[in-house]
Image 1 (cartoon, one colour):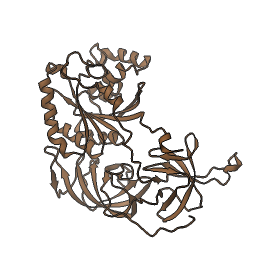
Image 2 (cartoon, helix red, strand yellow):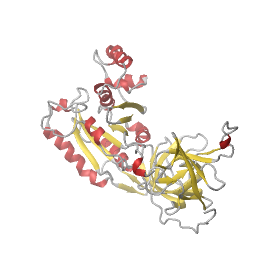
Image 3 (cartoon, helix red, strand yellow):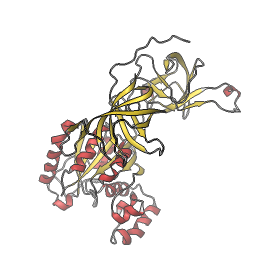
Image 4 (spheres, one colour):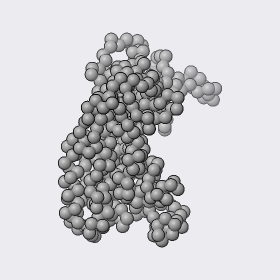
Length: 440
């Protein structure tokens, strides 16, 4: 079986909505679900029952995602809400993320696994700091596709000139970011214009509707298929199996974090540097000849190597980098500011190690997207570059090359609170040790 014969997971698109407070993120998702007929009858009935309470007698589509009582009372999103829907062309997972500055860390959480990010801009307000902040976070997270949805066009009389002003202002700072695929779409989420159906009020716009673009955007090349990586999550040893052939079964389970693995392929075990060949691959539907990122599999090797959770199986020809000192970008998520010298737990793929922040290199200003050098600390929701040292070396890739093996979180010891989400810079030099030809 060749890779070309395996269906890639391109029928599932993960995207998030972001932007400032009251830009209409929750209403947009509600409109997508409502107009694409993705709601159950009981959901529609619940919307109608709550209309007199929260919508002034009119269905409030934001209630589909703003599930917390505090969210409905204040009219803002606080927590990340996930919704699922499908059309004949594609399946979708939506993360509705908060717009308030106080909850920027929640936005990072919701966007961390997205293929596409929708940044909403209020046509009356234009591009504000929070618009730049969320676009910068999308760039930082290496989200490959971006839609700038200029919302509430009905409140600016469907003005093409106003849409162009906002687009031109956005395009001034986009070259500083790492987003290549950007689409601008004028919409009215409240009335549904250009969301699922084309707007009769904006004949000057000749592009696709929001849903048309979501269905058509190409995401097949978003996953890293170069350099096999399997962080071991679990050593699979069935207890008292009913099948006698599984009596001595020993497989290594986890989510493939990069590349392709095939039966018969030589792989290296990290950190032992011992090599073996893949004897079998078990997927969700049984045994397969090959598998690829981001599938979850169990790999069986020809040789009995001492492998445990936190280890990694990797491509012999393109090993990841090895280091205990790191340069990283982080979004700080803790109320207590980050200062150099503090110790944390660092969780990377399936292992957790002790780590210390040895220095803060800079902090990003969201006013002009310039870097402020050598700040004394990073406060809540700040984004900056830091230097780290870990208690033991980690095998990793740069985040730009592999979002799964190039990312980490910092955890506060004692409380186990997530303190930061981070992205590793590429290793200075890849480790090319003298591999042991054990059991080849």
